[in-house]
Image (spheres, rainbow over the protein chains, first blue to last red):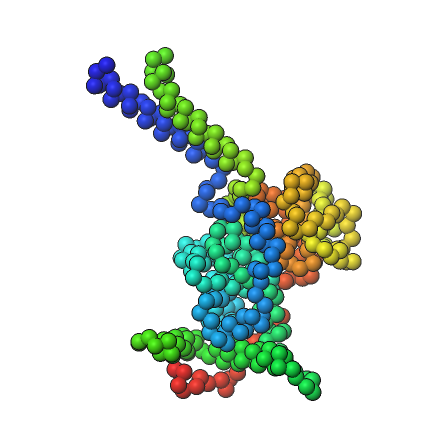
Amino acid sequence: MTFKQINMDARIRYSVLLIGVGIILAFLPFDAAQTFRLKSNELLTKSASEDMYFSVDQLARAVNSEDSTIQIIDVRSAAQFKECNIPSSINIPFDDLQNPLWEATLNQKKVKNILYGNGDQTASYAWTIVTGLGYPNNYMMKGGLNEWFRTVMLSQYSGEKITPTENARFENRLNARKAFTQINSLPDSLKTKFFNAKRLNQSKLDGGCN
Amino acid sequence: MQQLKNLKFVILLIVVLLILVIIRISDQSLFKKDVKSAIQAIQNNSNLLSPEQLNQLKGPWVVVNIGNSDLPDSIHVEHSMKIPFENLLDQTNRKILEGVDGKLILYSADVATASKVWVILNQIGFNNAFILNSGGNPEELKYKFQPDKSARLEQDSI
């Protein structure tokens, strides 16, 4: 067998292999990059678990303590977000969920993603999609912003006696309400300034530098 | 003939690859649809049905009640079945769902459950799944935020 023949055989082999793989890829019914990574039963089990929920009170506590282990994500439209939002939340509209720009924010292991909408529907869709895509640490605030208004913004105590637990809960809601009202009453330019100042204060408390 | 002999390893490799692809495609526990299709359907609200639309449906359909509570009195349906959320994809239930002729209409007392189930079923490939929206628009903000015009930031916070 001459060198030319060996070279020819190799070329034919590679060509057949490439054509074969090409045909298989062309007939694949889906683009793997765009599909859920989790198995269906795995996603169903996670979806059915109550562990996926954060209560409004839990989120209010996180807002008050400026908990850096959570990241609050508002899945409503930009216009709705502008009107009012939970302090320190990030706006990732549901329609824009697949934008590659958000992947680094959503697909991370450091903090918990707490999703919320006005009710439970959009946040549930968003939670199922990001969890299905394999992003870790996803939760949603049960009841959405409607529940936040009902529980936090309209909270009042009318009894004669108050137990320490009730008092703590009421104070938590009251502080969250103050933060919500204060932030959402500001013009947009001041909101940014406020959060930058908060971050600076936090870094000073943590012993960091400017 | 000689050339075919030379190619037998390549053909073997392609066959093995093909078998692996077929095994993957036929794995029922894997999702096969593009997420974009679910997002688009949600954006257009084409995955929702109101009780009025349900009453006007002409083709065959079945209401699947996911959860423990019964269907509300306002919805009178002849064809309904109850499947607990966590058992939805058990082999028996999956066969039942796959055997549904016409529209598969999902209902749950809380809108979150039906919404999660719809996304899962849609991504598995149930193109006939819809959500029965019985209580108006669940995403409507029922409260109006009243800004505090006198709100000022404390001087030391800026």
